[in-house]
Length: 382
Image (tube, rainbow, N blue to C red; front, side):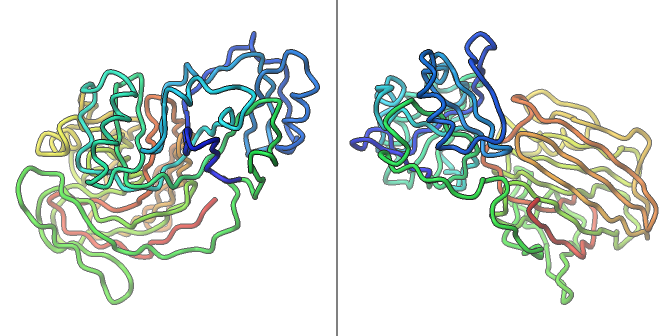
């Protein structure tokens, strides 16, 4: 399906997310109905105002009202018109709107802190003002008053909704392979693209690629994440880590990385701090406060949220630990860890509106005051 549906240029790439539909507004829901037949079915129901199609399972919903003005996340192209899109004619091409999108553009360094902008119109205007700085797309969260400015409107979307008419063909909407089950991807080795520090100092992380394709951190320094760029939305990420000295500090796996202030982290020490799955969502921009929150062992408001922990479980020196992580954005995290060849840890975490990250498309590894070697890292889409 094409992710750019426009009518006279007013709604370039407009999207919504986190939309709720009440049972009273739902006329029919059925799986296994292709996109074009979903719209045709809506056209045959007198009370159907919109169809809503989800690529997974080809789920077709028929709805008796326009639910999209109340969605909690909206986004659009810099050249678009939010007012026109939110109040578009339900008999025109602008009425086709996509949902549940993973945005592939890079975040600008000029996105305002949450709470600074009170509505999406201000976010849209800020992106227009920052055109010279590279802003091409904006995403606004209603619940947390967040405005994300990014360099590109490139995205993958799982849901589309639209009217009885005009037809999909008339508006240039074409069906392709469902997004979450796009053409099978081969196993891909982890590539070291860059790193970021979780500190307020100017310290430089000492990450080094090994001859065997691994990644090693020799120094006993500040908290840092080494990451690999753009990946498939739904992935399985595998690898092995082992410590390289007698320290017992922090080692971990990072994923769903949007930027250095927002990502998931599975980490723990070899001493007092149990392994845990956490959401790092720093309101201070990732600094010493964030690093302290990560190693605190508990959720810290404005910094971290612990999603799962294994009390009393720690890694040990001179042992290999092999992980398997399945991450489905907005849906779930499944994690398993072997100690040598023995099962060590397992957890499945469901994600919701509060714990989901939009636009996180990087994976990586983490260390804090701990020399460590990561080997055998690869990922595959699932």
